[in-house]
Length: 143
View 1 (cartoon, rainbow, N blue to C red):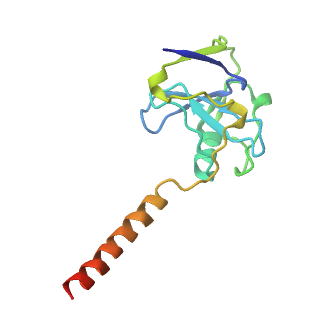
View 2: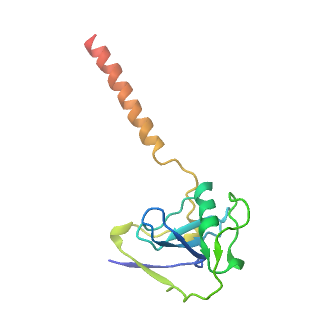
View 3: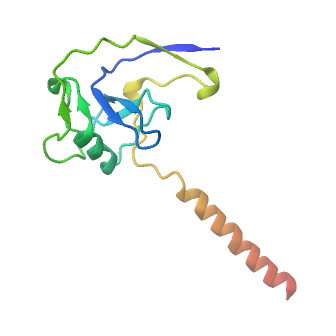
């Protein structure tokens, strides 16, 4: 069953998605750091806040209006992205999201900032621990 949520952050521009190579919409959080996030392409929403991703969006995005773009805290220099001065029709205020594409209640867009949390490192350490314990157990078992 689809659900609706209201976008609170304005559309700032577009940048090419590195995954699907289609234009992704660029938005910016209002929280500390003023990080960019992308949405609207086939890959879905991407909240990555690491410096290389933020710098790439800052450098490559085609911003709709320079006055509403703030430099994220981990980005250097002036934007190298193209500033588009023509008007673009407003996007609808609500977006349908299928329940099977995320589940649960959507978070407020201003509150989403996952930071630089490690995602795969913990799984690797667990796998290494299992291998080491299995090896030690095998040596002790075989005597």
